[in-house]
Length: 369
Ligand code: SAM
Ligand code: DTB
Ligand code: SF4
Picture 1 (spheres, rainbow, N blue to C red):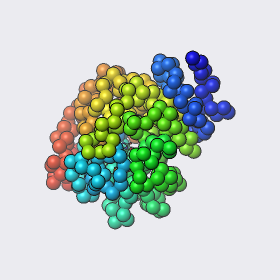
Picture 2 (cartoon, helix red, strand yellow):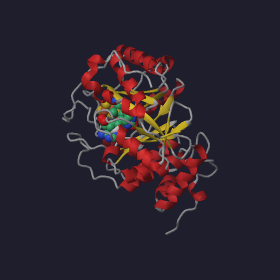
Picture 3 (cartoon, helix red, strand yellow):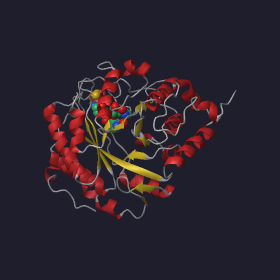
Picture 4 (tube, rainbow, N blue to C red):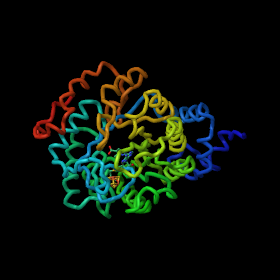
């Protein structure tokens, strides 16, 4: 078999270190996927080192600020009202509750706080409260991210004015596969919101899910679509499908873990300066595979024992993993990374862990570190 050289893989006339690496063809990304595993990881790690401290990982904590009851039909999602997944509907949280959760996340070492809502899109009344949340969380010195569904003209600008740093809105899969997974909106609807977000001056957080029964070519097409955005997203979450009973995708043939690592590597090579986040699916992932994802160029994770409705590794377990790998945590937004030491301040935060069960005490957040 002919093994493509590095130059054959780079799209013609394109410098892959540019902000906007336009011109990644699906064939070129598929050829990356087809490289021998070690060659692909070597290439990804080389690109990674050109732009980042190779041992540093950024921590984002997620909070579901409005849970379940979503009118959309995304085949992967436990929060769609039409699937019987056991997720209990919860109304939009209060600003105090969110601030208390953000304080806990900050005390445990997270530098970014991401607020997620199970909406098709926010009503203005709801957006007004999210804006208060953004202002308050920003006031804690954390980076803010929100994922609220589709935005109407003007809504992204309001979030930007409140101090929102990132808006997460995933394209989820390749354009040609999207209709197999979601029917209540099109991928073009997603692209419209991403345009609103970009035009408002917000940083774009946009990625997808693999392990939904798609082919390798579909995965390559997802990566090419992300890489060809102009500019490509600042933050690229790569999710491994968390299979939840009751969703249409429950029972899908699981993806080979090495194929997941390859997806991370392809994201790193094609989007050299993006933060590539090893996102959903880590709880099901052996630590050795996670370590390979970091080697392949992942430099961010969701941190804290819950994603939105499903589980994530315990914070202590992640800290122990970083310590074993000699990794560093990004200590504060856009400042120098610090070595993982004895996690005093992380241990001190343990009373926060049952935050949602004790949210009546939410008005009194724990002391800052
Ligand atoms: N409702 C908003 C939306 O769809 O944009 C925001 C929340 S939605 C849960 C955010 C993202 O979570 C989805 O775009 C999808 O990529 C990811 N996600 C949802 N369920 C997942 C699952 N079971 N496994 C992996 N990723 C999932
Ligand atoms: C993203 O790409 N993954 C996160 C975040 N952005 C919002 C969400 C993962 C959700 C996994 C399923 C759940 O916990 O409900
Ligand atoms: Fe609703 Fe978002 Fe889940 Fe789709 S992914 S069902 S839009 S919460």
